[in-house]
Length: 321
Picture 1 (cartoon, rainbow, N blue to C red):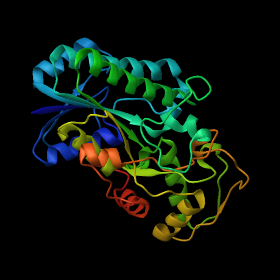
Picture 2 (cartoon, rainbow, N blue to C red):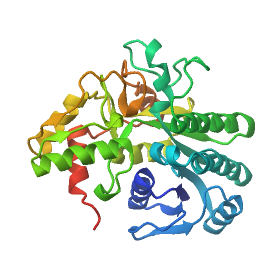
Picture 3 (cartoon, helix red, strand yellow):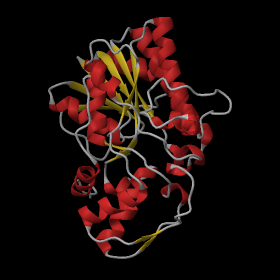
């Protein structure tokens, strides 16, 4: 069986490598060829919103399932909303339409736990389930990225209900991993900034409001992201359709700083300790961890890498230079 992985970013590349390592046939689609593509993985250059190109690729390679990761992240969406929403919304719809037309076996969609951040003020201390209630107006998504991911989940569920397209959406926590030279996401910038300061032995003034937060936050290693995507392809009956994928550990900014210091050397950080916002500039701190029991029960997936392990692996992976 041949799997199409859309997007050659952190999660897409890791998922493609994991599938290839277990002997699967894999095709990666992106608008440009990645610098390093492991042997045995085919590549197709295409825009994810190009329905004709997607039809051609599916037919040419005998694609039967898709891991859809192609998307613009928060910073890119803020810089260019029209392009970002075209890629994130129309791109997802293009994939789902192709899956309907070609009767593909399954589509795994990449989502984000940020879709529920707006609900934090009314959630209690219990783990937050995938189907947590949100007020549609007062607790609307707090960013273009979050609204695009929530819309993607809903599109996936609707295509499942109306057209029988077998979709699974994975809500990832803040992702750690990838090339050190390519850190553009908020967690990527955070850890790149902290680790670099620790290894250079200098005091850091952390004044970017997106990198300073109150309360705890959760993170997930890119290797676990890839493992969850493959588990979602393999799962026999993923009835819920949407799953939280994150490590159960919760980390305040001080705890993150301590973990960086433990793995990369002494680190002194000066930041505004009166900050009241949550991670990545969202208005409210996290009240509880995301529940991950549904991923274990229905996908057979549980995370293997905690934050210190992720930090060591991320640095050891190098910059790719």
